[in-house]
Length: 333
Length: 301
Image (tube, rainbow over all chains, first blue to last red; front, side):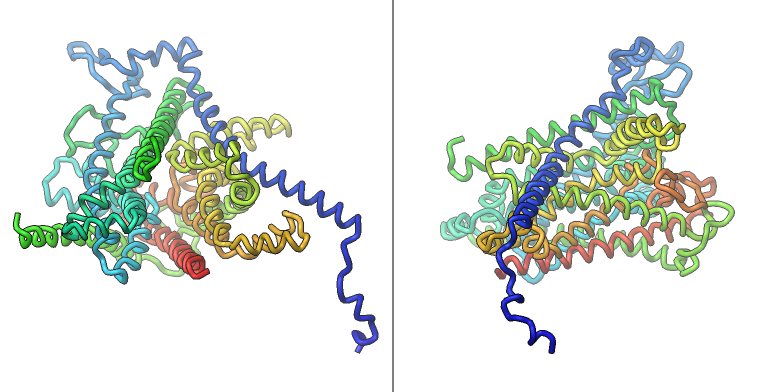
């Protein structure tokens, strides 16, 4: 009953007082500053990342001892390692005479990435063609989320699947001398990158204007010819972007190769031999390294190489995709 | 080529693409069944809540679960304000032609492409050595903060998941119709009031999705925490932000590769991997469902 005794006017808020308006304005400014700060954080973090990864690798250039232990020649050229043997490319930074050739690691990374891409690229793009061009829409609505679920499997789970199950299955099927090898790691890696390639390719194919398909079909092309010779080329920039992202993921992926590749730093083209990648080397050796040693600097150098590789890959692919897209839209390029 | 042959060939290739899609789904199924089949036999209530026994292969995995949860919790507390703030800046405050916003967008894009092991190196170089060292020097302690620990690992994962949060939050903000913003501003609300009382409440489900995605990504990442604070064998739960901790993913890695007797470690490994998979999988499922709802809502409006 008390409400009735109160004047009705009091229930309606009057205009805010000058004080309240000032407060609101101050808040407004504060929020804008905070939000802008958060927005800039990404730039700051990226710069910090460059600075701090490079800073820890810098002694390789500045420190005379480290410069001697890991000279450019030792990093890149074959080195004598034992009397009576030809100079070789070896990675064994903890031996008495550290051997610091980066080639075994780079080759290992290329092998695993190559296998992963050889499997995941055709499978991912074909599956994307299926869901965007051929599949009934009901099927599409559950195939896409299902494949996206695959992307959510932690790489350590894929790694232990490869280590425990896939490696044994492949060995009994093909009779490999080594249970863990580049092929096992590459196949497990393809599971990690196929959802990336599939999802982005599917998005790119769906973004192709419907008029393209209608025109091709009206000219008498079959459904497959329309998809493969009209829609796929039109979506090429996006599909290429998907492949590039897949490569980037494969090159940087650590746990799968650490667990399934056998981790022997060999210079060899044989996929059935154990192999060691750049990323796995950092993960495996960082734990035991003495901070400030040449070895530690080398591992940060490997990290800097991975970082720069991904940056260059992203930038060039991004530029290419933008140029191609601009041409497709008919804008002067 | 006759028309019939062209159609037949087309149908053949169409079937091949269907086969590719089926193979990918099948591969997912094989991994799931393999991991869960081995794991289900081991997993019991005791396995989750028990302290480990005499060695890593005995007893339960409670410290690893606790460590993972504590890690992702601290990570979420750090990344959400930063990520949501950055998305608000990019979507609500910056003008479309702003060069700063363009740079920020590019930086986030590149951060998303940085390999996770490089995040680990960054965490070690920046958080542990530089920040931790400075903290120790400022507080006069020796090697409290300047060594790997829970806080630094969480910070590293927060940087790693920042792009995920920003992208997902921006999508949520896009789903809020601009009319409600204009209406709020027209009624005399300031920009901050519009954000706090109109935009953020409307975008809340999407922001929740962002958090879930970040947690599921962060819980599964091992490479960054490898260098910034994880311990392979530590029955004591982490007592402070500077303690080391156990982690489900790292525990699985240790069991799979470092145990002297692989066969003895198998059951514990299967259980740990199954626990990690179920955890991240459920989180992902939640995110996918939330996101599908959000997108449907967006198309409807």
